[in-house]
Image (cartoon, rainbow, N blue to C red; front, side, top):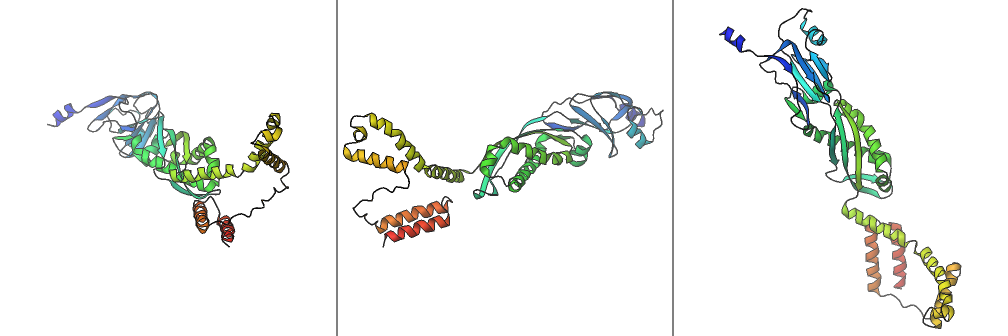
Length: 337
């Protein structure tokens, strides 16, 4: 019976791995119930590395090439087994292959908005997404810290860990940088480069090398984006005085060419006087326009209350400060007197 078992025993004399499935980072060669023949050939292809493990201990590491497994090419394994230079028996060791090619177009993004303190807008919630790429650089680190004795380990299994680590580092950078959202969104390339430098030692701890990291978009949630759009519009309206002066000054030469001069540009003398007054006021801001002899009608209580409600809404959205709202409120209440 023992003789039959011996005859049935299979000795491995050729060891190699072809990546039949995309995204496999580590693969254990099927040596279970097999023994590796002394002098066996080990083929490690380009974009691969191989690692021999003997009874749970890390032994020899091989880069791309063709190797004959003997005491000359297995110095660490030979030392572990206390072999001399003349050993000729088969040996049992686990062989692990690792793919070192780049894992491209790995996507990352914030599943939920992250809350940060912005120096310009106060407390805001941001979204961001992009892509990154990496490759396995140190099989020993990866074996010890990540894959272990697994038969296969894929990049999809690393995805959650790497993505969440990336987002956590990005959140810290948002808070530590003190850069406003507007400046950050306008300098995504620089932000991505800084984030990559922050993550290099993290990837190295797993035996990985981070090759590229791209920040494709930094944005606010929809409701906050609407508030930002409103604020931008208010800033544009805040410069309407200069725009009006420019428009009036530009219209004077054209009006003078019309029949009747400046008056002809309007509907009679009243229009001409109006343009003249506007021109004078535009060119001399210190001159106050003539006050109408007709007293202004007092605003109704309903109009004042409606205006106050609109102003309060702007304060709630952050467009008006509390001080600005209080001043506007005081002015409106005076009109009820």
